[in-house]
Length: 273
Image (cartoon, rainbow, N blue to C red; front, side, top):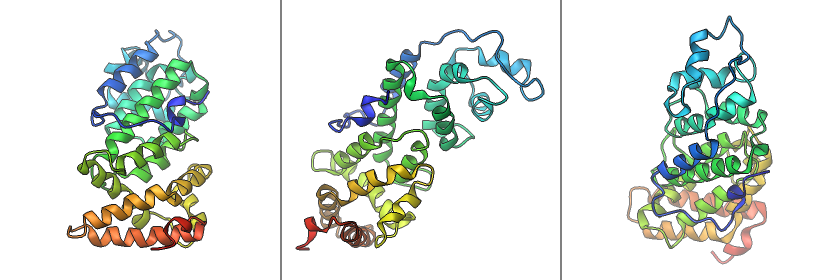
């Protein structure tokens, strides 16, 4: 089962979207830790008895270093699906705060291999809700090299095939309802996709280059870009921020989006521009 949260196109960012604490608490509660087997499969040359003992601690107390080592070795030389499942809340919360020394792509590769979408419904839903909260928080902070919406989506797509819930959050964050500061940062992430990614505006198929871990999600992001709402939100931002230091980059993004929509067949909404 794929999390219904991630496919919920009616999802709206919560007012407390900066805080991951409520979603993290629900995530830990959904996984209600079970004791590990006393015979965790492992390679005695790669994993020490101390490591095995440490992993038996309550998941919320596991150190980032221990969790990072476990993620790298899970499924090969240290444990399998049951061990990974038990530690998943800690893995995701540490990854959200950039406290792991492994990539988010590897985390999601491991979760896909473990078949996370087939886990109990409450666990799958909690993962989905946590990811939506994390993405909402990301959009409310100005983009920077390690904190850009399209790169986060590309990494998560290693284990998630349906990005519709995230794209709805992105669209709503740029729309007329949120606080203007939220609109500005969400638009900033869109500008990064249009101006700093591998996407070439005259060649829509290059959207797949933005998502090398899972090219199947590229059409979803293409639909997000060619829809009239994204174009209107970006143009509104260009008008409202015309006197700002970011005006030039936003105008470049507007032009690139126009070209992309024309090439992808979504030019009808802006034909008069």
